[in-house]
Length: 147
Length: 111
Image 1 (tube, chains in turn brown, green):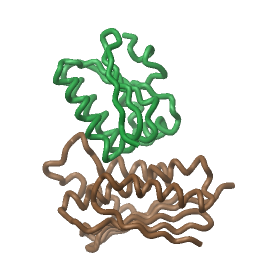
Image 2 (cartoon, one colour):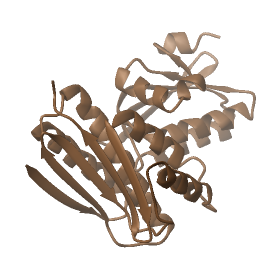
Image 3 (tube, chains in turn red, yellow):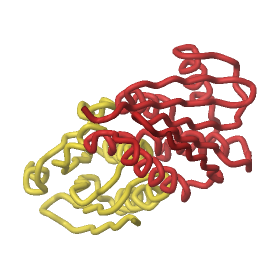
């Protein structure tokens, strides 16, 4: 089992670093090569959403990512924006509500736009779990091994 | 990889050939290019993403924003894409029903 932790400053320029680490971990963990692209996009979306949340709330702390590889890959992306506590579908509803309440958001730059991000996460990861709380939001993504 | 943009005219259409990665960091550059074209009165746009290596939801948002702008002026925005990994993203987000997606620039610029 391999564990990698990564703190990403809330700056859009660094989201690609998270994607690069995700791809490396996916390959090291035996994820099917055809699925590696899904890992790259899903982790990028989760990280971009978290970075956008920090920027929108003026948080300078980094977004935290952790990867656990071995038989497949587990990726976890955590932001520090406090929201009502919820899990699963309720947590998705909390994120959607928070996303809809963003005064001044640039309509074209929907980094962290919850509907699109959540649709992509559901479509790309083999398992998705979302938890919200006063300490922030955790998005857990999982993929199995090839074959 | 950064974003590259090449703009040229093809009949009544303005083609923007995009290369590289369209993500949360580079998407503003594409957004600015689309806004600039609309401000210059170009309302029939084709965005060619055949040379794009990566596209995320921010990039999709910029394309949707561009479509809204040209439609407000009775125009259109068409996509050229044959890459399955990008088409998958359009499908997951339901945007295959929003954009006309063509295989070639020639097909996209047919009236």
